[in-house]
Amino acid sequence: MRRRHQSIWLVLITFGISCSVHAQVPEQPNFDEHIQPILQTLCFECHAEGADEGGVEFDAAESVEALLANRPLWGKVWDNVLAEVMPPADMPQLTETERRTLSRWIGQTVFQLDSGAPDPGRVTIRRLNRVEYRYAVLDLLGIDFEVAEHFPVDDTGYGFDTIGDVLTVPPTLMEKYFVAAEQISEELLEQETAAKSDRSNANEHVFGSDKLPSDPAELFERAREIIERIATRAYRQPVDEATVNRLLSLNKGAFDADEASFAELVCRAIEAILVSPRFLYRAEFQPGPDDPHRVHPLDEFALASRLSFFLWSSLPDEQLLTLASKSQLREQLRAQVDRMLQDEKSSRFVENFVGQWLRTRDVAGLHRSTEYHEIVRRLRRDMRDETYAFFTHIMREDRDVIELVAADYSFLTEDLASFYGVPDIKGSDPQLVKFPADSPRGGVLTHASVLMVTSNPDRTSPVKRGQFVLDNILGMPAPPPPDNVPPLKESRVEGKQLGLLAQLARHRADPNCATCHDRMDPLGLGLENFDAIGRWRDEDGGQPIDASSQLASGEKFSGIRELREILAQKKRLFYRCLTKKLMTYALGRGIEYTDNQQVETIVDAMMAEEGHFSTMLMGIVESPQFQMRRGNNTTK
Image (cartoon, rainbow, N blue to C red; front, side, top):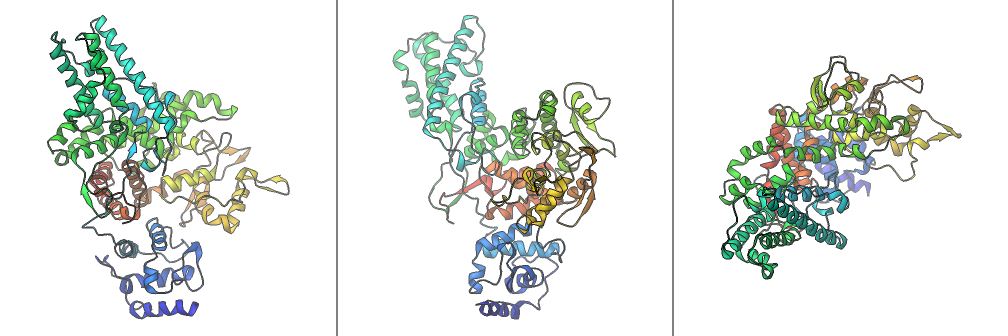
């Protein structure tokens, strides 16, 4: 069998081994000329001729055709090539031209991606998550409904609660929606009744400020106008007359042509709107919904909805819907994105995207040991707000997003500055503070919020912190540990607890653990000078802390400042990681191989344009993935 596999490679070598890779990335790389020489030179030692490290073996196929048809294998190769983790640091490396050539060939030949006819991917119809429900009701009716008290926590996928495949509606949740709609309409009715009694306009944006007509027919028409307007906002597209008539008929029999009856009629229709699938679900109607080959642009109402839920976690406003009704939204897309980011409602995007990407939403519910409890209780809001204000600054000032890793400034309150050891800061609002050159602070990895959510309740965790950096900064998450590996805190030898460095060394000495721990542990050790709540320390348990190490990619560092400099030099990896995280959040689905070419296009633009936030954001918003869709069948 091995001889047959080797003969496959002899055929390939005959065609390709003498050919050199062009200095310029070819538009249409072919296997014989461009790919096989790369594999022969840099990959065979570990992944052929009897070696199959990582489960990748290039010469195990029965034929060349079978090898090229093995999408799972090439998908794994593609992931590792883009993440720059292969070849290992102690072996000859791919040049950038070779890396891009191999990536392009995998996309074009193995996955048959056509840049002229891109696959926008499949988006599952999904319900509003509870954050979106809250803001939709707030923007629609002016009522801030306490969703945390009424709805269960949403499931997440790929790190976010915007993922369609996990946002199901069990029967118990549907019952809660009916109860919520009733409570909201009752509150709206009570507010309107109270407003009329003291002649105020508490619900002007719902009922209007004009004096109600006395004529019953005119009063009924006013109700129709209000319901049509609210249903259009709630359903994110114009509603037809039949829909409005059905909503009016729910309480028409009790209509007595007075103000009380008028408000009752409107509120009962709103209650029905709030339990309608057209409100609760984000559906995008399309021709040929079951044909995976049929790709078409979203209509502009669906585009407005995608944009508003992406940047505001809520319904499109009147301006977006007006542009969509005139088919002018696409031509004004960049201006609308700029407007939406400057709007206060964009803080929802920051809280929900950043809060899940960097896990700062977890800060509010974290429990720390007695030693830390009082400090965390007092500072947890300041810690969280530092990260939100920092990201908001980079977003609204359109700065290079690498500053998220490498900035020499942050946003501190007086109390948080004191906690960090930064003098002369006054006030309770986050304010821009530039750190001195010798400060260990700078970038989100030194934020107390991030350092705390990557620690245990009573101690630091280099493994958790290292895995966090791999997943959220470098975009190369480690797989879960084998089932038989004990947690780090339980690592003992002859009944004695091992020290931290000895425990980590023991894990790396185990071949089953070394692949991941060689990548994770050095990154986490570089943050070890920060304790479990993010305070700087020079010692732990009376012993000096050694935060020096060597990354799996070969770079040596001594402490957080040098580690941060190394990470800042890995711009392309960070740009790609952040782009994929943001695209996942925006699309409500995981990144697929069909998305890789678009991701690389965005990253190329960021590399050429100084990494501006707007380059990344508009690259996503203007992408086929965001503006188009295909049938829902999962086979292409």
